[in-house]
Amino acid sequence: MLVIEAGKRFTRDARELPSVTVVGFGVIALAGVMEVLLYLAAGGMAGHLHGGFAPEKGAHLLGIIGMVLALAGVIRDAVRRPTRRSSANSGGLNPHAHR
Image (cartoon, rainbow, N blue to C red; front, side, top):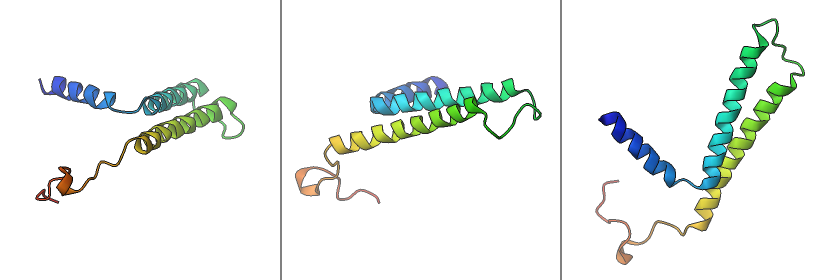
């Protein structure tokens, strides 16, 4: 039962994320899968050279693009929303909250 509740909470929290951030996380996951597949396809240490292995560099570039997208989504969401902090007089934050 606890795993089901955690899954529901994760889904609810994921729906609140900006769509650009979700796409960025998907691109990062795709880059990670590409990395693993490329390392497995290299077949041991003899087949893996750290020189000009273009698909490996492409997977790294895809991961960086995913990170930029995720960060851009968070920044865009923060810019579009008004500040969440308001004074206690306007009914915002609880002035007696534990800090």
